[in-house]
Length: 575
Image (cartoon, rainbow, N blue to C red; front, top):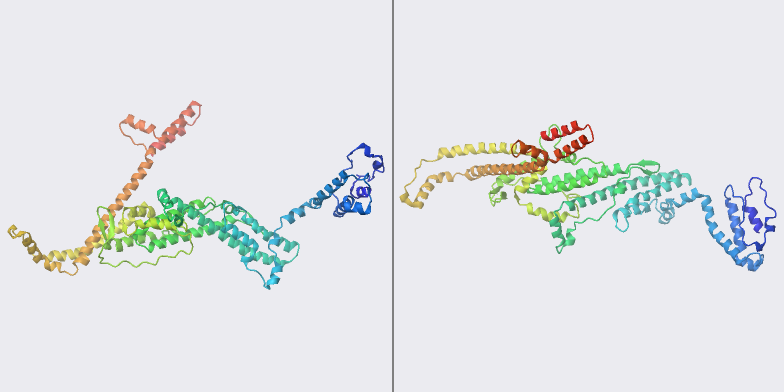
């Protein structure tokens, strides 16, 4: 049997001559001798490998020795039997190594995760819905259950390989085109849902992160110390969405899909929808809601900046201008500007009283003009709109402090939302309205002036009550005038409120310009004394000092950058 085994698997080179007496010359007294055979040029065939393993198993199997008695102890020792058994066990992998390509393809084939005809026959249905597709179940589970212990979101696209392998088997193994069409239809549906879910979760996560970072740190610490801290959760969990967001070459059924572009389109649409929701919510509120609007826009802008690190999306200024309808040849003002102007003219000025000490407009207890009709607040059809689901309650508590009045903080939010370049347009419209109110009031004042009776100052001998009684009797017809309060006094109230609003806006702009000047002061030449003091201040400017250092270094090493350094100094001086 040993000779038959050798003749079966040995390869004797080009001449093919098998040694005839090498085993005869061997003696057990020589000890262990390594057999020297010519290395095979090619591997054994599957038949040779199977026969070899069968013969080896037959020789070392103890049941075969006991029953047949083919070998005696001096022919096969225990070490020989152990060696044969070890060879038999290790040769099990030879068949897979000889067919390495098919082995790798079979091990990486995920097509079995899709095929489920057996269950279709049991259920008696034509096809399962997408919710019962195992690749989709795995994909949805990874997206919706992103735990820190199992960060599998970077491997989410491996679930799509089940469709690639199933399609390969349908075309090249089963030769069934209709089955391939079915796989392709399901893949298109699953991939659309995948793109939507990834975009939705990416936007939600970055919105919660941006909203948490925009909150004041002292306010966040106070929320964490409250008894209901679990209702004010502001710390979003970590997510690893960078890998799926950066995929640009995803292979699906022979097609190369740019996942990054598809997700960017969905996220871009969400940004527009989010800004639209914030603007509609502001339009449905009074002017005190501009603080909420400014904070919401800040959160959306932070969200956009975070997503822009992975996706190619529109700039926030472009999104805001398009939603605000402030672009176009006929657009003189955006929706926010129109709402601010309308709220001031039709609501704040007629129905509010100005407090000089707090510099706030507070609603009057008695109003002569009805409040303007506003649209109903929009309903958020998704939790990530506005401030997000995680920080919504915290922002609601913070925004309550700025409602019910209009003050300096609202003007600062107004300047931040509309921009300093839009304030002159707002003031110009307020002055136009002020002129209309003055013209409206002038006719009443002229009529009252003409109707005043001639009167002289009474003598002091009548006392205070007497003097007051004289004037009260003279002016009683005018006080009985029906349009005095609703027209004249109301117009004077609106005129005074308009002037107070313009003054407060001017103060806010002055502070804004002061902040800009303070920020630019280190880069601007400001001479505090004579020529020597001005030159010393000039040399202390960081940009000038850096340019001077570069000029000195170049001069010390024989460089030719003096002209450039001089140009830098000239540019800085002009700035």
